[in-house]
Image 1: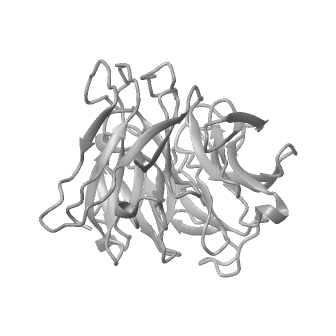
Image 2: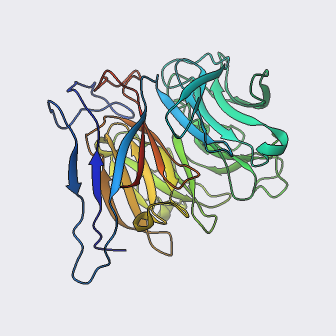
Length: 380
């Protein structure tokens, strides 16, 4: 998969803006610019004899959103989209039509609010939607049918104005996986009796699967600081994107029951202490990684099997090429400092990639009067 030609056609109008400086989700915008109009960039040049590949076009699908945090697709191809700060659940069609369908009773501030959303694998039969949101006392997972009152199925996840985790997705095994943060208390991450700083795995009704690594415990892996991205490859292997502190952000390959080191280890170097090292790291200025997705049976064949990770502070979409052992063999920057902070990425039923910006959150600045936006990456 080395040596491939990929062109991006970016159809956007962007305005220059400043950005706060700090760690985690905050960052300094690396390049100032006046305006970007339609343009074409060659990201890689194919070597001699390399097969030709098609272009990838980036188009604007929806605009004027308020911190769109998570995507989950319905069987008909529409997406459910959460707005973190407003608590609104939106329905966005592939044609870009946006409808508010429900407001959920979140009570978060800072990085809390209405975060992850997932659609039941049996949606056509049970019509259940799942959400992760912040209350005054905890972060929790609920399920509901659209228009009905949410039913809590997992409560007591530690809460703060930062490090709230929040991504939820159904895995290939039909279980619901939940990413949580340490809520500012790093001791939560090593405490298996705490739900903070973990990857959790529960049944669709919230009960603990009998094959979880720790009996009667939803904890699937631990020693995490703040995970906001979950993605599976075609073999069913789970990968997560994780915020570091001041030095290294990470992607981890998750195995049941394993300890990923926080707060004793950040980045690589924890193996000698019995922890699992990440498969790739970035300086925090290049990432602050949020959403993650692996393209499986997608519409962009040259990216098949690649892991995509969104970057907030880094203001780009990372493409990570994985080999057959699940190791990162190549990294590429997409949308680099072109659309601002990028929050989530998800593969739509048609095989395209949807990406959301996060320029109206508490750490960002709008680049355009249209922010925040949902973008679509598809063959040109």
